Length: 301
Image 1 (tube, rainbow, N blue to C red):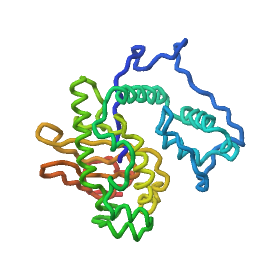
Image 2: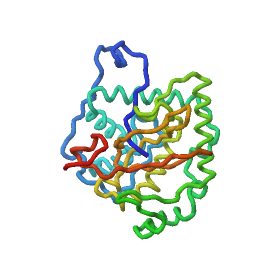
Image 3: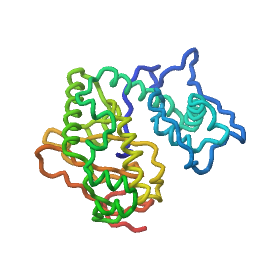
Image 4: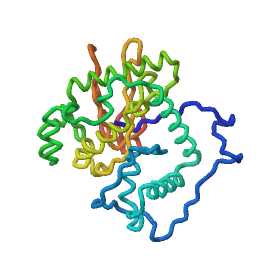
């Protein structure tokens, strides 16, 4: 679960890389008039139970709306879900960097085109089923929800790096076969897909072919409790978005992945495969802000 940089799929537009707005030569920009009583809270209202937005077609991940709802002013908590959604959407669009609104809309259309045409192989993957997804020891640790319960199933080979058994073998097999099925569809349909990041030529974004809701629940119910305990300094208790993907390595695939820094607060790595050798993951220490993206060498901070 990572925030690596993504490419944007090509779309039809006005020749300048943007989609023309209706009845205008300019992109429409929402104007938000906010009164003092409508200002967002500085800290989340942890006693408020947010609504679910998973059944709506939105510009942003449903989990973003559920998370942002905890920051709504009291005057907004009693309005309808649609009014909350419109209020939050206007805020999100207003503060996006220039051109980001168009990029979000293009990505939404791209994803919807895939989901409308791709037929899943293992539909049980698309909803969260903890008892069939996770090993019993992991479920118990999450249920107990204490640092002691988490550490009881973990080892910490390096500060801030934790290893533990999490997924059932059957779930891993289903996920692998689903990815293979998706790749077959991509090849048969000659559909050009976005790769997970700019460093890998092979692999797929799981969110793009329907697994977004399942991964939202994985993050909210099973990753966030752990990150709240072990990564509070980077907002581990308030993770509100994810980038779920698989990458492939092999003789006719990518052969390695060079030194890099994930664009994420917390990353969950899972080693999947059938018969293979290698696949090791190396961590080269903690890097300060000054050298976070420099080459692999001794740091001088």
